[in-house]
Length: 106
Image 1 (cartoon, one colour):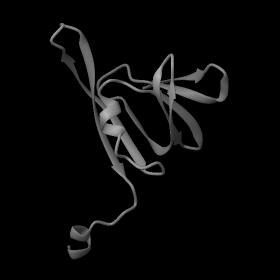
Image 2 (spheres, one colour; image 1 turned 45 degrees about the horizontal axis):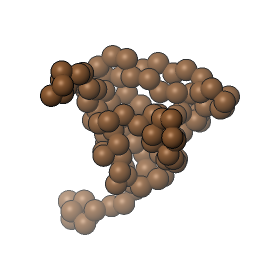
Image 3 (cartoon, one colour; image 1 turned 30 degrees about the horizontal axis):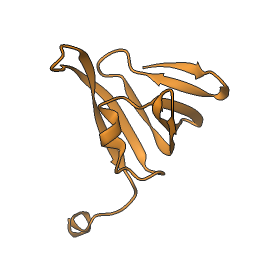
Image 4 (cartoon, helix red, strand yellow; image 1 turned 60 degrees about the vertical axis):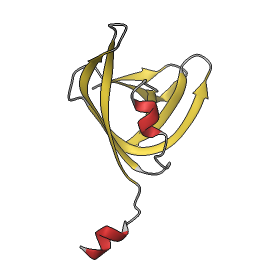
């Protein structure tokens, strides 16, 4: 994954997934809407602020994840849409720190 400085946010970097297997892991800090970019997600990764622009596949997967959760986002595949466009597919996992009842029984 390539990180580049976020314009206008000198203390932040943009996450850019270029190759299958690229991964972002960090604490989910914030989400906001932009007229130009849509959803903008903010993470803390190794003490640095990382910005991720909402990708079509990521938006529904991030919808139920609480802010403050540890999140792992991995670029896993390319999907061809009905219009023959390529769409990046991501695996999104998270740990919100809540212990499920099933985990307690084990």
